[in-house]
Length: 193
Image (cartoon, rainbow, N blue to C red; front, side, top):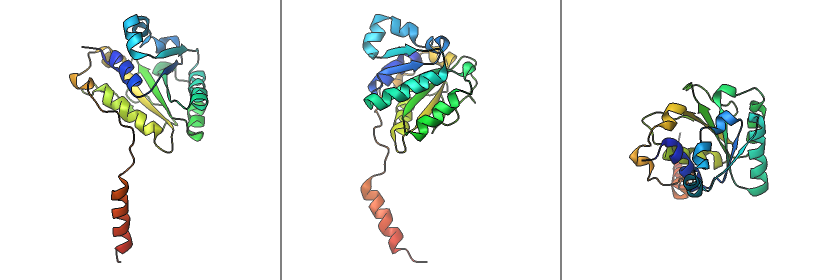
């Protein structure tokens, strides 16, 4: 059975992520050993790019999206979040840049999140990582597109993934059914005070 870290890589690839920009070597340490393993790297098809600052990783993901139209993941270390990463996240929100910000959290500080993100969630031991990452990607891509943040405690990422993580459906569109919207609109128009 794969670990949650291995399941994360497979899930990122399934939802269309091709690049991970890491804001530090300690952040990259969460998945770098897996990508060094040729089998895991071949299965995931992901490329890891490491820099020495969180704001640079966020800016790289934003530039990648603007050039390719493809959302990227940004891997940051919650212990090393600096004030310089906040403007980058806010700028990505302003420019409607979807990205998954993955906070590596060695100390399991579940309150760690990145200000300026559209949505933030912490992975818990009883949760499956695949549906959580899929939901986060759908939220990031939905209008207005913006960064979302997932807090990934090290202890949980090293644990074996639950069996339900292996099978999930990728959420592509979180918009309501147009027929339902028309029905509600008609009912509101017909309503009397």
